Length: 446
Image 1 (cartoon, rainbow, N blue to C red):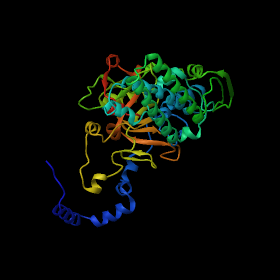
Image 2: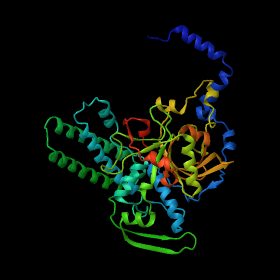
Image 3: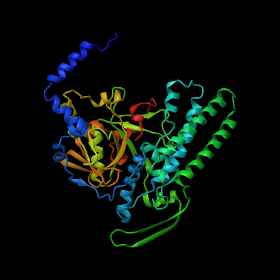
Image 4: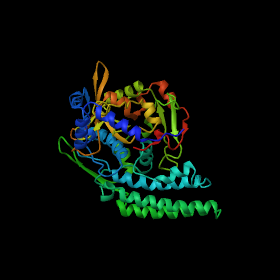
């Protein structure tokens, strides 16, 4: 079947438009103010006030600036929240995001080479190779990828490796590094397919490529230090402390002290291809070769939210991933389904279920933040407090309000300490994961 638009159609559409109620007023309003401003529902402000029955103390909001490191900021923020309480650290204390950024770019380079070698026999127009070459690496990531980095490289305070121009503005290095990785992919594929090189020669070439990448990243972010001093003055009594000659691994063990294996990813994916109480992983997704692999436990929304509530009740913030742009007013810090009345403005039906939005590409996880509070009424959540990483000039000094129905629709992942799982859920998490395709929506990077 083939259907074209003819002159009679256009004439009919024009007539319908002219007879549609308030068309001229709405045309003037939307063209002058834009779709979002014209459809903004001011009642959403009153419906989403920043008051919560459970409200954790978390200090100043960080700022990822012009980079896609939200997943790092959110993860390191959950750790610094704990550190601030344990060691009475000042509100502006942060862990170094630039340090993790350096090693993530470096490890992603090697992970890309591994995938190139693994798919070298496939044609360049195969879906896997096309997916791989579309974006060899980017700034995004997932919780398990951050755990893989920390397990290998540790962490350090921001003072030991501060921000650089490029860590805060990553577009330039992303463009050049992806150029380099695609260039290297050509060489590796030719070696395997045309020269029939042996494993030793391929590995030697890979190491040469990584040496070049290390130099590029050191120029870009600064070379990470291997030892540093940790100096701070406590928030309350202003007592000065200095701990000298620490390695990043020693610092993590002494000052963060988390068993990363205890913190696991729970997803909320109601699509027909993903059963609840089953674990999933994603093919070709990761950063550290031989490190922690991606693993998600899929749960119904009521169980998903209850785990987050239990963790908050115990004073622990919650890393989470969502589709932050949907119905989100950044300046006011509101994420709610009634923020914009697009359907009423245009008199169209835009409703899709969460599963349909995932299956048809309308929504997917694109941003990670931290839940630091929840408002419970008769034991049920009505709204959630969110710490973003866009600085203190948006929202309520950087904090957002997420309505409970927005969470239902656009929240896809939380990280939960296993101690809050029932024995049944622990057995569910122990199941071998089903492997999803690289392009599955649960494999998108925050």
